[in-house]
Amino acid sequence: MPRAKGGVVTRRRHNKVLKLTKGHKATNHTLYRRAHESMLHALDYAYCHRRERKGDMRRLWIVRINAAARVGGLSYNQFINGLRKADVIINRKTLADMAVSDPSSFSKLLTLASDKLKS
Image (tube, rainbow, N blue to C red):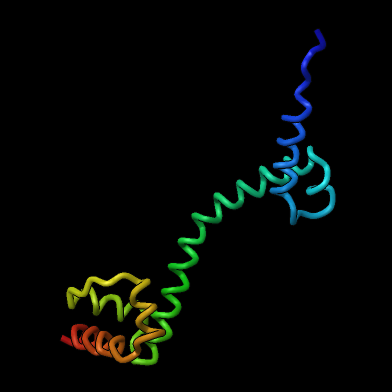
């Protein structure tokens, strides 16, 4: 009885890796061994950068809040400090969205924060 070889299974596994590395350069998407290394690195970077993106977004929100607060005459840290003293609990994502899409309500928060800083 002839021995069974795993050619079909191996080919499918190789094709799966080659499909994942479709946009990679040079031999990193044509040769299986190089493609496998490239795929492992790419998946590792994707995992790490999904976590980094959270910090990137927070930094973006802070920049937007700071720009909007400076228009109202306060710096970012003064604005956040004033909100804390006024017992306003609102996250930075919402504040940044408010600064961009609803400037009138953001200016109300600015006046509230500045009043609490003065008193």
